Length: 262
Image (tube, rainbow, N blue to C red):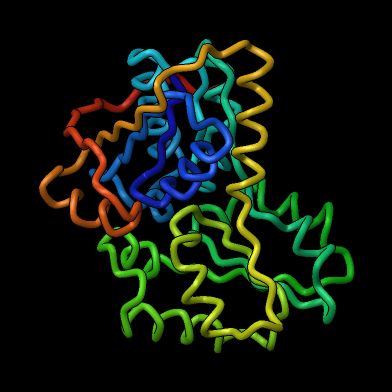
């Protein structure tokens, strides 16, 4: 089984890409909805939650853990790889492919404040974006829209248009939060065909598949299960809207990890 977690429902876009590549592999998705969103939370709290979620997935039998959250990856990927006993796959905003794709040298990165303030994001920009203007856009309101299952509403469209109006005309948009791929069709409608929208979920799925082959992960029955630290009755309708079909959902309580940081 492969375990996947995010602060909420955004990581479902990554799970969809993994399921497409590994349709016979059992998947367990954990939405840490009680702590969503991670973006504005203190760094140490994000690290604690990420480790707690990773450990819980391993306890359930995960042979690979996928951190389907840019904020949690930026804050805790090294900690997770040090502390848990299975391979850990993380993700980061697609700055490198965006720089390769831009024609006018202007790129917008839609993400959470936690991702955009991270050393990991700054390192990506410094390493790959020489000569390119990168405009970071913190969009917590879009995270909230996805958590509510509002993927096509007028309000969501209005928020997207408001964010993009704050930067010069860009020709590449990076979806630097896993909550945003479900909004890709609406973003493309708002921007037009001249703008390239980059989602790194497929690259994460490809890396997950490579690791699965390396460790000889046995085939399962292709079952998909979901758990949430929030109220399942509140999460279930949005889960249906984002995934597009019913998925088994249970409520779980996961205490924060206790970690001594050096």
